[in-house]
Length: 441
Image (cartoon, rainbow, N blue to C red; front, side):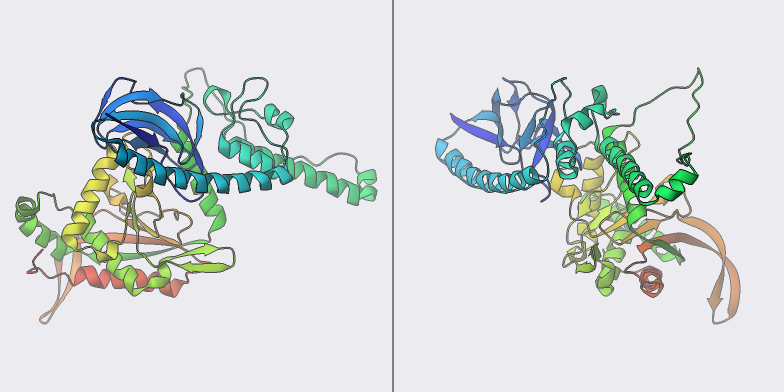
């Protein structure tokens, strides 16, 4: 028998540790290949860690709510076979773990210069996540101050939003003190402090139900607010005649399913056209870092998907421009299915360079989506509707019934001007309206 060490996998570059939120398997349980063993949480996403082998769980090394570093062994699985493979795997993982540890030590030394270390658990028993501790150390928040912050998380834990709100308020108080020192004459003339603008209190009636936002809901809310405050959002709209696409799909969908075993929806057809359009306009596939622009080499399409709890997640189709329609259909269907069952891997929701959201799936004609930072644009697909339209023919104009949809393009006006934003969706329109009714799939 061999022993396989299940390690906390590498995630996004900025993520060096995660919190174990729930063990899905107990010691003695049989585990299949790729079966989820444990749920973990970072400041960016909740995800599951699957097993790389088949076997029996014989040891769990960390309890729930424990913070674990990337590369650390979190459990041991007993498998059939020799130890040689395991030793090689362990050696490689140990090397990676040593590299991660070296980076962590560098970060720790830097943060020690900025502020005194913040313990994971305070004397009063409060637990602080790695993200909250890092923010506290960077901003010079003492443990005494941290203890005074009212937490809105589970069991009163201080969240990222709580500590950032505290910093905002603390910053305002500091600025007010400096102004008072710089203007002693005005203070003498008017000792009454100016009222500070506050949000109107929320009225709660006896019959109201108070619901706590989910962890993912809080992260999404923060991400959306940050995006609006970061980017200068501008929208362009265009109406596209997709009658030929509707007819073509109706004609080939049964044969497509019979040959490929996949349902052909409108989403992969539209995503395939979007990827081709991005290739023609590479300056829409960029990111902003301060005063510099990062031009992305790969076209990685984010596909916003609704979860059963009402939240959204954005799985990413990597190198989308390299897929034909069949490949795009399989990628879209696979990611959508696993998104709904919470079976996505951390790396499958990272590294997106452009996002598409289908607001039409909920019946909306159009929408004005918020940019998914650090990207600079996002496309919203509206509902396809039968509408009366003027049709040009050699014999003259006449009114007919056509299948049309609106497309909304939100883009960051700091780096994407109206010409580029408008030409992008104009080209997409031309591509879709030129769809060949007789083409093969």
